[in-house]
Image (cartoon, rainbow, N blue to C red; front, side):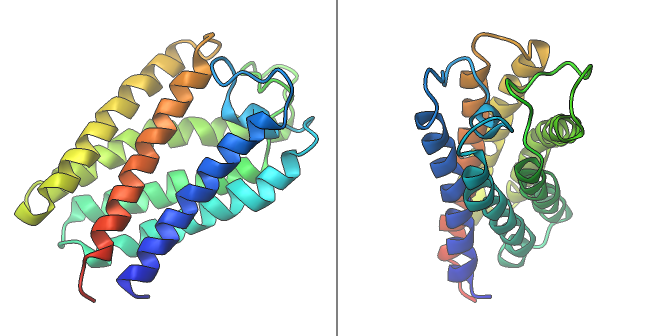
Length: 207
């Protein structure tokens, strides 16, 4: 694939995620972006949940996976960069696909008691994604830091990694926080910011 195609795949992947995350809440009466998880907009009891799953999150995760596996080819040779992007492909890309296939129960409860199998898988995958996501970003940032031409992207990776890590810690500390919707959206915006920045940088590369 050409660098431009890879860049477009990355931008389309996060765009589908963002569109689904914006449209989903609009389809549910009294949904609160402040106090409700994104997953609650396509929970098993929602009317339009399957549309969001199969036209939003699942294809988004597939495109993000392809992008993250393809990216290292266009960056300087570094084990940290490769490990970071491969980690994003596995935990964020494939993780998004899995949470799309396995929606949470109504209200997305964090208590395992009386949870469905889909809910348990959803929670487990989401937790792993959020645990490794900031680690991958910071690793990529450290790998890129060694190369002068990638200083800006290195800074973006480090900053978004640190910000997402702080908000993930806050979310894990109190999963039922009245501000969990805001916390999660800041995390997702951090990821989207890094992805778009990476895609734009790749677009400038010469095949």
